[in-house]
Image (cartoon, rainbow, N blue to C red):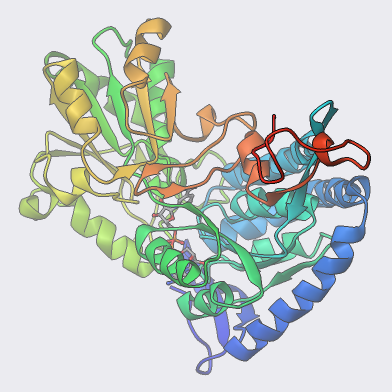
Length: 487
Ligand code: NAD
Protein backbone atom coordinates (compact mmCIF):
# COMPACT_ATOMS: atom_id res chain seq x y z
CA UNK A 1 0.00 0.00 0.00
CA UNK A 2 1.15 3.55 -0.60
CA UNK A 3 2.40 5.06 2.62
CA UNK A 4 1.41 8.57 3.66
CA UNK A 5 4.57 10.42 4.72
CA UNK A 6 4.20 13.01 7.44
CA UNK A 7 0.39 12.71 7.53
CA UNK A 8 -2.14 13.48 4.82
CA UNK A 9 -1.23 15.17 1.60
CA UNK A 10 1.55 13.00 0.21
CA UNK A 11 1.49 9.62 -1.49
CA UNK A 12 4.77 7.71 -1.39
CA UNK A 13 4.92 4.68 -3.64
CA UNK A 14 7.08 1.77 -2.56
CA UNK A 15 8.55 -0.88 -4.84
CA UNK A 16 6.39 -4.00 -4.35
CA UNK A 17 9.48 -6.17 -5.01
CA UNK A 18 11.57 -4.37 -2.30
CA UNK A 19 9.16 -2.67 0.02
CA UNK A 20 11.75 -0.55 1.83
CA UNK A 21 12.54 1.27 -1.43
CA UNK A 22 10.41 4.38 -2.11
CA UNK A 23 10.19 4.77 -5.88
CA UNK A 24 8.61 8.22 -5.87
CA UNK A 25 6.29 10.64 -4.15
CA UNK A 26 3.34 12.67 -5.42
CA UNK A 27 1.33 15.35 -3.66
CA UNK A 28 -2.28 14.48 -2.97
CA UNK A 29 -4.70 16.94 -4.60
CA UNK A 30 -7.10 18.53 -2.07
CA UNK A 31 -10.79 18.54 -3.04
CA UNK A 32 -10.82 22.35 -3.47
CA UNK A 33 -7.89 22.12 -5.87
CA UNK A 34 -9.71 19.39 -7.86
CA UNK A 35 -12.54 21.83 -8.39
CA UNK A 36 -10.20 24.58 -9.59
CA UNK A 37 -8.38 22.18 -11.94
CA UNK A 38 -11.67 21.13 -13.55
CA UNK A 39 -12.58 24.80 -14.08
CA UNK A 40 -9.23 25.47 -15.74
CA UNK A 41 -9.64 22.36 -17.89
CA UNK A 42 -13.08 23.58 -18.93
CA UNK A 43 -11.63 26.92 -20.07
CA UNK A 44 -8.79 25.18 -21.95
CA UNK A 45 -11.23 22.76 -23.61
CA UNK A 46 -13.12 25.57 -25.29
CA UNK A 47 -9.90 26.71 -27.01
CA UNK A 48 -8.73 23.18 -27.77
CA UNK A 49 -12.02 22.33 -29.49
CA UNK A 50 -11.60 25.26 -31.90
CA UNK A 51 -8.33 23.82 -33.22
CA UNK A 52 -8.70 21.82 -36.42
CA UNK A 53 -8.81 18.04 -36.05
CA UNK A 54 -5.49 17.53 -37.94
CA UNK A 55 -3.78 19.86 -35.43
CA UNK A 56 -5.13 17.89 -32.47
CA UNK A 57 -4.08 14.63 -34.10
CA UNK A 58 -0.59 16.03 -34.70
CA UNK A 59 -0.36 16.57 -30.93
CA UNK A 60 -1.20 12.87 -30.39
CA UNK A 61 1.41 11.82 -32.96
CA UNK A 62 4.08 13.94 -31.26
CA UNK A 63 3.14 12.42 -27.90
CA UNK A 64 3.56 8.96 -29.47
CA UNK A 65 7.11 9.85 -30.57
CA UNK A 66 7.98 11.32 -27.16
CA UNK A 67 6.67 8.25 -25.31
CA UNK A 68 8.50 5.93 -27.70
CA UNK A 69 11.75 7.86 -27.21
CA UNK A 70 11.41 7.48 -23.42
CA UNK A 71 10.25 3.85 -23.42
CA UNK A 72 13.20 2.42 -21.45
CA UNK A 73 13.01 5.03 -18.70
CA UNK A 74 9.20 4.77 -18.50
CA UNK A 75 9.18 0.97 -18.52
CA UNK A 76 11.75 0.81 -15.73
CA UNK A 77 9.76 3.24 -13.60
CA UNK A 78 6.56 1.28 -14.25
CA UNK A 79 8.24 -2.00 -13.27
CA UNK A 80 9.53 -0.42 -10.06
CA UNK A 81 6.23 1.11 -8.97
CA UNK A 82 3.89 -1.72 -10.05
CA UNK A 83 5.96 -4.92 -9.72
CA UNK A 84 5.18 -5.84 -13.33
CA UNK A 85 8.04 -7.47 -15.19
CA UNK A 86 10.08 -5.13 -17.37
CA UNK A 87 9.23 -6.87 -20.66
CA UNK A 88 5.52 -6.49 -19.96
CA UNK A 89 6.03 -2.81 -19.10
CA UNK A 90 7.79 -2.21 -22.43
CA UNK A 91 4.96 -4.09 -24.15
CA UNK A 92 2.26 -2.03 -22.46
CA UNK A 93 3.92 1.27 -23.34
CA UNK A 94 4.51 0.11 -26.92
CA UNK A 95 0.83 -0.82 -27.24
CA UNK A 96 -0.15 2.63 -25.97
CA UNK A 97 2.06 4.21 -28.66
CA UNK A 98 0.43 2.02 -31.32
CA UNK A 99 -3.02 3.01 -30.07
CA UNK A 100 -2.15 6.73 -30.27
CA UNK A 101 -1.14 6.20 -33.90
CA UNK A 102 -4.26 4.13 -34.58
CA UNK A 103 -6.43 6.99 -33.28
CA UNK A 104 -4.50 9.56 -35.33
CA UNK A 105 -5.21 7.44 -38.43
CA UNK A 106 -8.88 6.59 -37.78
CA UNK A 107 -10.27 9.67 -36.02
CA UNK A 108 -10.71 11.73 -39.23
CA UNK A 109 -13.28 9.30 -40.62
CA UNK A 110 -14.91 8.60 -37.25
CA UNK A 111 -15.29 12.28 -36.29
CA UNK A 112 -16.12 13.73 -39.71
CA UNK A 113 -19.53 15.30 -40.27
CA UNK A 114 -21.97 12.99 -42.03
CA UNK A 115 -24.02 14.92 -44.58
CA UNK A 116 -27.17 14.00 -46.50
CA UNK A 117 -28.33 16.61 -49.01
CA UNK A 118 -31.12 15.49 -51.36
CA UNK A 119 -34.69 16.14 -52.47
CA UNK A 120 -35.96 15.56 -48.89
CA UNK A 121 -33.63 18.07 -47.31
CA UNK A 122 -30.22 18.56 -45.76
CA UNK A 123 -29.01 16.78 -42.63
CA UNK A 124 -25.62 17.43 -41.06
CA UNK A 125 -24.58 15.09 -38.25
CA UNK A 126 -21.75 16.59 -36.22
CA UNK A 127 -19.56 14.68 -33.75
CA UNK A 128 -19.02 17.16 -30.94
CA UNK A 129 -16.88 16.80 -27.81
CA UNK A 130 -18.52 16.60 -24.39
CA UNK A 131 -16.26 19.14 -22.63
CA UNK A 132 -14.25 17.94 -19.62
CA UNK A 133 -13.80 14.16 -19.35
CA UNK A 134 -12.88 12.62 -15.97
CA UNK A 135 -10.63 9.58 -16.49
CA UNK A 136 -10.21 7.35 -13.41
CA UNK A 137 -7.75 4.52 -13.85
CA UNK A 138 -6.41 1.49 -11.95
CA UNK A 139 -2.81 0.58 -11.26
CA UNK A 140 -2.51 -2.70 -13.16
CA UNK A 141 -1.99 -1.31 -16.69
CA UNK A 142 -1.91 2.41 -15.95
CA UNK A 143 -0.34 3.63 -19.18
CA UNK A 144 -2.49 1.84 -21.74
CA UNK A 145 -5.68 2.27 -19.69
CA UNK A 146 -5.06 6.02 -19.48
CA UNK A 147 -4.11 6.39 -23.15
CA UNK A 148 -7.26 4.46 -24.17
CA UNK A 149 -9.22 7.37 -22.72
CA UNK A 150 -6.88 10.27 -23.47
CA UNK A 151 -6.30 9.61 -27.15
CA UNK A 152 -9.90 9.53 -28.41
CA UNK A 153 -11.07 12.15 -25.89
CA UNK A 154 -8.40 14.67 -26.94
CA UNK A 155 -8.77 13.88 -30.64
CA UNK A 156 -12.48 14.66 -30.35
CA UNK A 157 -11.76 18.04 -28.73
CA UNK A 158 -12.36 17.25 -25.05
CA UNK A 159 -10.13 18.21 -22.13
CA UNK A 160 -9.24 15.39 -19.72
CA UNK A 161 -8.60 15.31 -15.98
CA UNK A 162 -6.96 12.01 -15.02
CA UNK A 163 -7.01 10.48 -11.56
CA UNK A 164 -4.52 7.61 -11.54
CA UNK A 165 -4.45 4.95 -8.86
CA UNK A 166 -2.38 5.91 -5.79
CA UNK A 167 -0.74 2.48 -6.21
CA UNK A 168 0.90 3.48 -9.53
CA UNK A 169 0.79 7.25 -9.97
CA UNK A 170 4.33 7.89 -11.21
CA UNK A 171 4.75 6.58 -14.78
CA UNK A 172 1.38 7.76 -15.92
CA UNK A 173 2.12 11.28 -14.63
CA UNK A 174 5.31 11.31 -16.73
CA UNK A 175 3.40 10.08 -19.79
CA UNK A 176 0.71 12.73 -19.40
CA UNK A 177 3.38 15.46 -19.23
CA UNK A 178 4.38 14.48 -22.79
CA UNK A 179 1.04 15.66 -24.24
CA UNK A 180 0.92 19.31 -25.39
CA UNK A 181 -2.82 19.29 -24.75
CA UNK A 182 -5.42 20.09 -22.06
CA UNK A 183 -4.72 17.13 -19.78
CA UNK A 184 -4.47 17.52 -16.04
CA UNK A 185 -3.70 15.03 -13.27
CA UNK A 186 -5.17 14.89 -9.78
CA UNK A 187 -3.75 12.48 -7.21
CA UNK A 188 -5.50 10.69 -4.41
CA UNK A 189 -7.84 7.86 -3.51
CA UNK A 190 -11.59 7.36 -3.75
CA UNK A 191 -12.40 10.77 -2.23
CA UNK A 192 -10.37 12.57 -4.88
CA UNK A 193 -12.07 10.48 -7.59
CA UNK A 194 -15.46 11.32 -6.13
CA UNK A 195 -14.67 15.06 -6.03
CA UNK A 196 -13.79 14.81 -9.73
CA UNK A 197 -16.77 12.71 -10.86
CA UNK A 198 -19.22 14.87 -8.91
CA UNK A 199 -17.97 18.17 -10.38
CA UNK A 200 -20.65 20.11 -12.24
CA UNK A 201 -18.34 20.83 -15.20
CA UNK A 202 -17.40 17.19 -15.81
CA UNK A 203 -19.48 16.09 -18.80
CA UNK A 204 -18.31 12.49 -19.23
CA UNK A 205 -16.76 9.92 -16.90
CA UNK A 206 -14.47 7.11 -18.05
CA UNK A 207 -13.75 4.67 -15.21
CA UNK A 208 -11.68 1.49 -15.18
CA UNK A 209 -11.45 -0.43 -11.93
CA UNK A 210 -13.21 -2.87 -9.65
CA UNK A 211 -16.92 -3.34 -9.06
CA UNK A 212 -17.18 -1.46 -5.72
CA UNK A 213 -15.52 1.66 -7.19
CA UNK A 214 -17.55 1.30 -10.39
CA UNK A 215 -20.78 1.16 -8.43
CA UNK A 216 -19.90 4.31 -6.44
CA UNK A 217 -18.78 6.21 -9.55
CA UNK A 218 -21.88 5.19 -11.53
CA UNK A 219 -24.14 6.34 -8.70
CA UNK A 220 -22.40 9.71 -8.42
CA UNK A 221 -22.37 10.25 -12.18
CA UNK A 222 -25.99 9.12 -12.41
CA UNK A 223 -27.00 11.64 -9.78
CA UNK A 224 -25.59 14.41 -11.99
CA UNK A 225 -26.87 12.76 -15.20
CA UNK A 226 -23.29 12.57 -16.41
CA UNK A 227 -22.81 9.76 -18.96
CA UNK A 228 -20.15 7.17 -18.16
CA UNK A 229 -18.03 4.38 -19.59
CA UNK A 230 -17.32 1.67 -17.00
CA UNK A 231 -14.70 -1.01 -17.54
CA UNK A 232 -14.92 -3.27 -14.50
CA UNK A 233 -13.70 -6.61 -13.21
CA UNK A 234 -14.06 -10.03 -14.75
CA UNK A 235 -13.95 -13.70 -13.79
CA UNK A 236 -13.06 -15.08 -17.20
CA UNK A 237 -13.58 -18.78 -17.91
CA UNK A 238 -11.20 -20.62 -20.28
CA UNK A 239 -12.91 -23.72 -21.68
CA UNK A 240 -10.94 -26.50 -23.35
CA UNK A 241 -13.20 -28.52 -25.67
CA UNK A 242 -12.57 -32.27 -25.92
CA UNK A 243 -10.47 -31.90 -29.11
CA UNK A 244 -8.20 -29.10 -27.77
CA UNK A 245 -4.51 -29.99 -27.91
CA UNK A 246 -2.31 -29.83 -24.80
CA UNK A 247 0.86 -29.18 -26.81
CA UNK A 248 3.65 -27.06 -25.32
CA UNK A 249 2.87 -23.81 -27.17
CA UNK A 250 -0.81 -23.94 -26.28
CA UNK A 251 -0.34 -24.66 -22.59
CA UNK A 252 2.58 -22.22 -22.25
CA UNK A 253 0.27 -19.52 -23.64
CA UNK A 254 -2.51 -20.53 -21.26
CA UNK A 255 -0.20 -20.36 -18.22
CA UNK A 256 0.86 -16.80 -19.04
CA UNK A 257 -2.78 -15.86 -19.80
CA UNK A 258 -3.40 -16.45 -16.10
CA UNK A 259 -0.12 -15.40 -14.49
CA UNK A 260 0.99 -12.29 -16.41
CA UNK A 261 1.02 -9.38 -13.91
CA UNK A 262 0.71 -11.99 -11.14
CA UNK A 263 -2.88 -12.75 -12.14
CA UNK A 264 -3.90 -9.12 -11.61
CA UNK A 265 -5.40 -8.46 -15.04
CA UNK A 266 -9.10 -7.85 -15.69
CA UNK A 267 -9.13 -10.29 -18.62
CA UNK A 268 -6.80 -12.95 -17.19
CA UNK A 269 -7.93 -16.59 -17.58
CA UNK A 270 -9.30 -16.93 -14.05
CA UNK A 271 -11.16 -20.28 -14.17
CA UNK A 272 -10.01 -23.21 -16.28
CA UNK A 273 -12.40 -25.93 -17.44
CA UNK A 274 -11.29 -29.19 -19.11
CA UNK A 275 -13.13 -32.46 -19.86
CA UNK A 276 -13.14 -34.54 -16.64
CA UNK A 277 -11.62 -37.49 -18.52
CA UNK A 278 -8.63 -35.31 -19.47
CA UNK A 279 -8.14 -33.51 -16.13
CA UNK A 280 -5.09 -35.54 -15.03
CA UNK A 281 -3.27 -35.18 -18.34
CA UNK A 282 -4.12 -31.46 -18.36
CA UNK A 283 -2.62 -30.94 -14.88
CA UNK A 284 0.52 -32.79 -15.96
CA UNK A 285 0.86 -30.66 -19.11
CA UNK A 286 0.15 -27.49 -17.10
CA UNK A 287 2.81 -28.16 -14.46
CA UNK A 288 5.32 -28.88 -17.22
CA UNK A 289 4.39 -25.64 -19.02
CA UNK A 290 4.74 -23.62 -15.81
CA UNK A 291 8.16 -25.20 -15.37
CA UNK A 292 9.13 -23.81 -18.80
CA UNK A 293 7.61 -20.31 -18.69
CA UNK A 294 6.84 -19.22 -15.13
CA UNK A 295 9.67 -17.68 -13.12
CA UNK A 296 8.69 -15.53 -10.14
CA UNK A 297 11.23 -12.97 -8.95
CA UNK A 298 12.65 -9.48 -9.40
CA UNK A 299 10.63 -7.74 -12.16
CA UNK A 300 13.81 -6.12 -13.52
CA UNK A 301 15.81 -9.37 -13.77
CA UNK A 302 16.34 -11.21 -17.06
CA UNK A 303 14.14 -14.28 -17.52
CA UNK A 304 11.64 -13.39 -14.78
CA UNK A 305 8.04 -13.63 -16.05
CA UNK A 306 6.09 -12.86 -12.87
CA UNK A 307 6.74 -10.28 -10.15
CA UNK A 308 5.12 -9.63 -6.78
CA UNK A 309 1.51 -8.59 -6.24
CA UNK A 310 0.76 -4.91 -5.79
CA UNK A 311 0.41 -4.46 -2.02
CA UNK A 312 0.60 -6.05 1.42
CA UNK A 313 -3.21 -6.38 1.41
CA UNK A 314 -3.13 -8.14 -1.97
CA UNK A 315 -0.39 -10.47 -0.69
CA UNK A 316 -2.42 -11.40 2.40
CA UNK A 317 -5.58 -11.99 0.35
CA UNK A 318 -3.71 -14.18 -2.15
CA UNK A 319 -2.11 -16.32 0.55
CA UNK A 320 -5.52 -16.84 2.16
CA UNK A 321 -7.07 -17.76 -1.18
CA UNK A 322 -4.27 -20.16 -1.99
CA UNK A 323 -5.19 -22.30 0.97
CA UNK A 324 -3.42 -25.63 0.68
CA UNK A 325 -3.02 -28.37 3.28
CA UNK A 326 -3.02 -25.91 6.16
CA UNK A 327 -6.06 -23.93 5.00
CA UNK A 328 -8.12 -26.26 2.81
CA UNK A 329 -11.50 -24.81 3.76
CA UNK A 330 -10.59 -21.28 2.71
CA UNK A 331 -9.59 -22.31 -0.81
CA UNK A 332 -12.61 -24.56 -1.23
CA UNK A 333 -10.49 -27.69 -1.16
CA UNK A 334 -8.86 -29.22 -4.22
CA UNK A 335 -5.23 -30.11 -4.76
CA UNK A 336 -2.80 -27.20 -4.64
CA UNK A 337 0.13 -27.45 -7.07
CA UNK A 338 3.04 -24.99 -6.80
CA UNK A 339 4.03 -23.63 -10.18
CA UNK A 340 7.29 -22.76 -11.90
CA UNK A 341 10.47 -21.46 -10.28
CA UNK A 342 10.04 -19.23 -7.25
CA UNK A 343 12.86 -16.76 -6.56
CA UNK A 344 10.76 -14.14 -4.75
CA UNK A 345 11.24 -13.40 -1.05
CA UNK A 346 7.79 -12.90 0.56
CA UNK A 347 9.45 -11.20 3.54
CA UNK A 348 11.08 -8.37 1.58
CA UNK A 349 8.56 -8.02 -1.25
CA UNK A 350 4.88 -8.77 -1.86
CA UNK A 351 5.65 -12.12 -3.48
CA UNK A 352 3.14 -14.95 -3.63
CA UNK A 353 4.01 -18.47 -4.76
CA UNK A 354 1.80 -19.12 -7.84
CA UNK A 355 -0.49 -22.14 -7.75
CA UNK A 356 -2.93 -24.23 -9.73
CA UNK A 357 -5.76 -25.62 -7.59
CA UNK A 358 -7.26 -28.75 -9.17
CA UNK A 359 -10.87 -29.62 -8.37
CA UNK A 360 -11.92 -26.99 -5.79
CA UNK A 361 -15.55 -26.48 -4.76
CA UNK A 362 -17.22 -24.54 -7.62
CA UNK A 363 -18.97 -22.36 -5.04
CA UNK A 364 -15.68 -21.35 -3.32
CA UNK A 365 -14.43 -17.75 -3.67
CA UNK A 366 -11.50 -18.94 -5.79
CA UNK A 367 -13.94 -20.05 -8.52
CA UNK A 368 -17.02 -17.91 -7.98
CA UNK A 369 -15.35 -14.48 -7.61
CA UNK A 370 -12.55 -12.54 -9.31
CA UNK A 371 -9.40 -13.66 -7.45
CA UNK A 372 -7.03 -11.02 -8.96
CA UNK A 373 -4.10 -13.09 -7.66
CA UNK A 374 -1.67 -15.77 -8.96
CA UNK A 375 -3.89 -18.68 -7.88
CA UNK A 376 -5.92 -20.40 -10.60
CA UNK A 377 -8.55 -23.15 -10.29
CA UNK A 378 -9.10 -25.95 -12.84
CA UNK A 379 -12.32 -27.93 -12.89
CA UNK A 380 -13.42 -31.01 -14.84
CA UNK A 381 -16.69 -31.05 -16.80
CA UNK A 382 -18.77 -33.81 -18.35
CA UNK A 383 -20.83 -32.06 -21.07
CA UNK A 384 -20.79 -28.86 -23.11
CA UNK A 385 -24.12 -27.80 -21.60
CA UNK A 386 -22.73 -28.26 -18.10
CA UNK A 387 -19.57 -26.27 -18.77
CA UNK A 388 -21.49 -23.46 -20.46
CA UNK A 389 -23.77 -23.15 -17.45
CA UNK A 390 -20.73 -23.06 -15.15
CA UNK A 391 -18.87 -20.56 -17.36
CA UNK A 392 -21.88 -18.24 -17.55
CA UNK A 393 -22.68 -18.42 -13.84
CA UNK A 394 -22.19 -15.27 -11.81
CA UNK A 395 -22.65 -11.59 -12.36
CA UNK A 396 -19.47 -10.84 -14.29
CA UNK A 397 -19.16 -11.05 -18.07
CA UNK A 398 -15.92 -9.46 -19.22
CA UNK A 399 -13.93 -12.05 -21.20
CA UNK A 400 -13.91 -15.77 -21.93
CA UNK A 401 -11.99 -18.18 -24.11
CA UNK A 402 -12.60 -21.43 -25.95
CA UNK A 403 -9.81 -23.73 -27.06
CA UNK A 404 -10.30 -26.31 -29.82
CA UNK A 405 -8.55 -27.89 -32.80
CA UNK A 406 -11.57 -26.84 -34.89
CA UNK A 407 -12.01 -23.07 -35.29
CA UNK A 408 -15.60 -23.36 -36.58
CA UNK A 409 -16.59 -25.42 -33.56
CA UNK A 410 -14.88 -22.90 -31.29
CA UNK A 411 -16.76 -19.97 -32.86
CA UNK A 412 -20.09 -21.79 -32.54
CA UNK A 413 -19.37 -22.45 -28.85
CA UNK A 414 -18.12 -18.89 -28.29
CA UNK A 415 -21.48 -17.44 -29.38
CA UNK A 416 -23.03 -18.95 -26.26
CA UNK A 417 -20.74 -17.25 -23.71
CA UNK A 418 -22.11 -14.35 -21.70
CA UNK A 419 -18.97 -12.27 -22.24
CA UNK A 420 -18.08 -9.00 -23.93
CA UNK A 421 -14.94 -10.45 -25.54
CA UNK A 422 -14.25 -14.10 -26.34
CA UNK A 423 -10.79 -15.28 -27.35
CA UNK A 424 -10.22 -18.40 -29.46
CA UNK A 425 -7.16 -20.55 -28.67
CA UNK A 426 -5.64 -17.80 -26.58
CA UNK A 427 -6.66 -15.48 -23.74
CA UNK A 428 -5.68 -12.14 -22.22
CA UNK A 429 -3.46 -9.61 -24.00
CA UNK A 430 -2.13 -11.97 -26.69
CA UNK A 431 -5.68 -11.94 -28.04
CA UNK A 432 -6.29 -8.19 -28.00
CA UNK A 433 -6.64 -6.15 -31.18
CA UNK A 434 -6.73 -2.42 -31.77
CA UNK A 435 -9.50 -3.22 -34.29
CA UNK A 436 -11.82 -5.02 -31.84
CA UNK A 437 -14.02 -3.20 -29.29
CA UNK A 438 -13.39 -4.35 -25.70
CA UNK A 439 -15.73 -4.17 -22.71
CA UNK A 440 -18.02 -6.19 -20.50
CA UNK A 441 -21.61 -7.43 -20.34
CA UNK A 442 -23.69 -8.03 -17.21
CA UNK A 443 -21.99 -6.37 -14.19
CA UNK A 444 -18.58 -6.05 -15.87
CA UNK A 445 -19.49 -2.57 -17.03
CA UNK A 446 -20.80 -0.68 -20.02
CA UNK A 447 -19.37 1.12 -23.01
CA UNK A 448 -16.37 0.01 -25.03
CA UNK A 449 -12.70 0.87 -25.52
CA UNK A 450 -10.63 0.32 -28.69
CA UNK A 451 -11.83 0.36 -32.31
CA UNK A 452 -14.65 2.54 -33.67
CA UNK A 453 -16.81 2.15 -30.56
CA UNK A 454 -13.93 3.38 -28.40
CA UNK A 455 -13.71 6.53 -30.52
CA UNK A 456 -17.48 7.03 -30.43
CA UNK A 457 -17.53 7.17 -26.60
CA UNK A 458 -16.00 10.67 -26.61
CA UNK A 459 -18.33 12.46 -29.01
CA UNK A 460 -22.00 13.21 -29.00
CA UNK A 461 -23.99 13.42 -32.20
CA UNK A 462 -25.61 16.80 -32.80
CA UNK A 463 -27.78 17.28 -35.88
CA UNK A 464 -28.68 20.26 -38.09
CA UNK A 465 -31.67 19.58 -40.37
CA UNK A 466 -33.34 21.72 -43.02
CA UNK A 467 -36.35 19.85 -44.55
CA UNK A 468 -36.65 20.58 -48.29
CA UNK A 469 -40.39 21.13 -47.86
CA UNK A 470 -39.72 24.34 -45.93
CA UNK A 471 -37.10 25.85 -48.15
CA UNK A 472 -38.06 29.41 -49.02
CA UNK A 473 -40.33 29.33 -52.05
CA UNK A 474 -41.16 25.63 -51.71
CA UNK A 475 -44.86 26.40 -51.30
CA UNK A 476 -47.49 24.91 -48.98
CA UNK A 477 -46.89 21.45 -47.51
CA UNK A 478 -49.32 18.66 -48.32
CA UNK A 479 -51.09 17.45 -45.15
CA UNK A 480 -51.08 20.88 -43.49
CA UNK A 481 -48.67 22.91 -41.37
CA UNK A 482 -48.21 20.26 -38.64
CA UNK A 483 -47.95 17.08 -40.78
CA UNK A 484 -45.12 14.55 -40.41
CA UNK A 485 -42.50 14.92 -43.15
CA UNK A 486 -41.96 12.61 -46.11
CA UNK A 487 -38.48 11.44 -45.08
P1 NAD B 1 -10.11 0.15 -7.90
O1 NAD B 1 -11.56 0.14 -8.30
O2 NAD B 1 -9.77 -0.05 -6.49
O3 NAD B 1 -9.46 1.54 -8.32
C1 NAD B 1 -9.53 2.03 -9.64
C2 NAD B 1 -9.49 3.54 -9.59
O4 NAD B 1 -10.72 4.04 -9.06
C3 NAD B 1 -8.40 4.11 -8.69
O5 NAD B 1 -7.90 5.29 -9.29
C4 NAD B 1 -9.14 4.39 -7.41
O6 NAD B 1 -8.51 5.36 -6.60
C5 NAD B 1 -10.47 4.88 -7.95
N1 NAD B 1 -11.62 4.70 -7.06
C6 NAD B 1 -11.89 3.64 -6.27
N2 NAD B 1 -13.06 3.82 -5.64
C7 NAD B 1 -13.54 5.02 -6.05
C8 NAD B 1 -14.72 5.78 -5.73
N3 NAD B 1 -15.62 5.33 -4.86
N4 NAD B 1 -14.90 6.97 -6.34
C9 NAD B 1 -13.99 7.43 -7.23
N5 NAD B 1 -12.84 6.78 -7.55
C10 NAD B 1 -12.63 5.58 -6.96
O7 NAD B 1 -9.38 -0.92 -8.84
P2 NAD B 1 -7.85 -1.39 -8.83
O8 NAD B 1 -7.60 -2.25 -7.64
O9 NAD B 1 -6.96 -0.25 -9.07
O10 NAD B 1 -7.88 -2.31 -10.14
C11 NAD B 1 -8.32 -3.62 -10.11
C12 NAD B 1 -9.72 -3.80 -10.66
O11 NAD B 1 -9.87 -3.14 -11.90
C13 NAD B 1 -10.01 -5.27 -10.93
O12 NAD B 1 -11.33 -5.58 -10.52
C14 NAD B 1 -9.86 -5.38 -12.43
O13 NAD B 1 -10.55 -6.46 -13.02
C15 NAD B 1 -10.39 -4.06 -12.90
N6 NAD B 1 -9.89 -3.70 -14.23
C16 NAD B 1 -10.77 -3.70 -15.27
C17 NAD B 1 -10.30 -3.43 -16.57
C18 NAD B 1 -11.23 -3.43 -17.76
O14 NAD B 1 -10.83 -2.98 -18.84
N7 NAD B 1 -12.44 -3.94 -17.64
C19 NAD B 1 -8.95 -3.15 -16.76
C20 NAD B 1 -8.09 -3.16 -15.66
C21 NAD B 1 -8.57 -3.43 -14.39
